[in-house]
Length: 190
Length: 190
DNA sequence: CAGTTTTGGTTGATGTTTCAACAAGCCTGA
DNA sequence: TCAGGCTTGTTGAAACATCAACCAAAACTG
Image 1 (spheres, chains in turn orange, purple, blue, brown):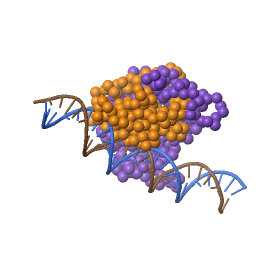
Image 2 (tube, chains in turn brown, cyan, orange, purple; image 1 turned 90 degrees about the vertical axis):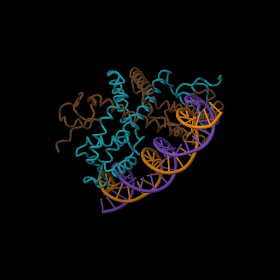
Image 3 (cartoon, protein in one colour; image 1 turned 180 degrees about the vertical axis):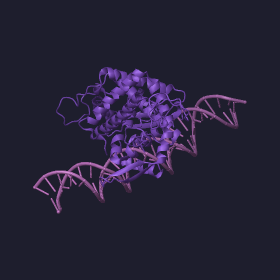
Image 4 (cartoon, chains in turn green, purple, yellow, blue; image 1 turned 180 degrees about the horizontal axis):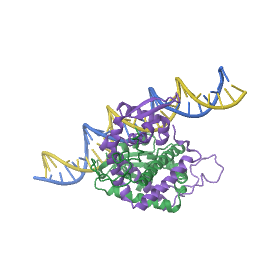
């Protein structure tokens, strides 16, 4: 009834505390003593989440429109372009891209069918497979990069002040380090 | 390798390839006068991109593990929980979530099959469909929220200083505003 | 140096998202 | 009023991602 409690972002409950502790640590005898997000934290988390989803969406769309590459394919090509001999092991690629191995296998197979990369046995480790960028892959990447960079500028870099963007990079580098070095970052990795 | 020009992030070319392969029918000087990202900008963009992918990945994984909801389903429930009568039009929901209409239709159909929401005709507009959260949807959300909030804290909020996190929210709010009010934000929307 | 475990990679089934096409209701103007 | 265009929402097929199962080679272990 009147109990539609103007719910905070991902904090739909705060329930048994009607008007009270929406913003503070709630050490109540609930199932879990979770420290809820403050209203400001909710706003910030939502802004980050929402903006990022839309940003990635529009950038991926523009990339596909201008080059026919998906964001993931583009990223595979970038990594290969930076690797010695434009070649990298599948496992290394998967780790770099934070993709599951199986996802990478599928992606690379499709890219191979289109002639963007080739796979070959790895000499050092008979289990391994090496992925190499073809000339077509290279020219495709070279053609794709300028409009993509423009996208990133238009929708992100140039929208912020240089200081804001630097701070964003710093913060996210911290987040990234914490994630990859964290205790159980087992989450991914197939 | 002498010919592998230590390539920057998404800037694989920089200069090594002049007019090469670009559009032939362009009499203009140069393919595009794109302003490349500086090295620092590349680092920051990559940190943001990479950290975000991993972050969303691990948070979605933990949410699914603890509640059986995907991140998208969770978000649908949150929006409904905040709407009057826990009901919202499909179109409004799709806009809020930056999902295509067709994606939302599929998602909601699956959620309806699981009893989390129900759909009904919209009285005001015979084309419309209203989506309402069920009691099961509510209790599911209430159970899902605490561990999810904990996830967000563990991997993002508490990893940064309060100032960093505030700045992140501010910056991304700017990015979001620019995206939704931008000239052609037609990108999405089915 | 056999037996076990771990790692690298693939496969196919299943689930989800995207895309194009469509149906039906709304709205406008002549 | 009714023709045309816009909006809302759905559908089915195709593309893509995820998951569990699997094989083969390496790396341990006793």
